Length: 114
Length: 110
Image (cartoon, rainbow over all chains, first blue to last red; front, side, top):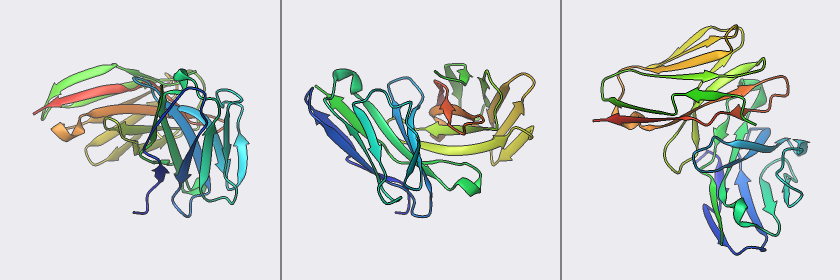
């Protein structure tokens, strides 16, 4: 499968725990995006990377959220001290900037905070 | 904040009918994209239309863009039960950060 993959697909955690999600983009794509999606809403942009550079992070929801893309390939999104309000689907997408901005989405990680 | 707003929020039609969804936005854009999302899944890109384009086609899909009215429409012709999904528009402005609307939930009855 040469699409965008995300791991895990589901995560159940207790309030206060830290969680980390991984996204593997399509290999030749240099842009990688993270979104959060809650029920009945569209994806909400969180942050994005151009290769290993994080170009926009002001929309991360709080300082408990952080993302990395250390070698310009896979990326991780970490949420520290999870809260029940963090329960949502976390989506990753990648794009090849020169190809006209089409984003390819992964299947998402569904987070449930108890 | 959500830039694009889809209308209607929900649409229920019979197989074979056409489905039209609209997207309105507030600020100038570089491009607008339509995506489909099946329940509990990731989004699938349908069509991208740039700000200097007025209409694009892809199979049974037709997208129009009216920048003077800051609106776009997605037409699905001869709908099928498999078209049942949520449809989102996403706009990109000068920052190239995509902003999605809340989506239109389409149900196509066989």
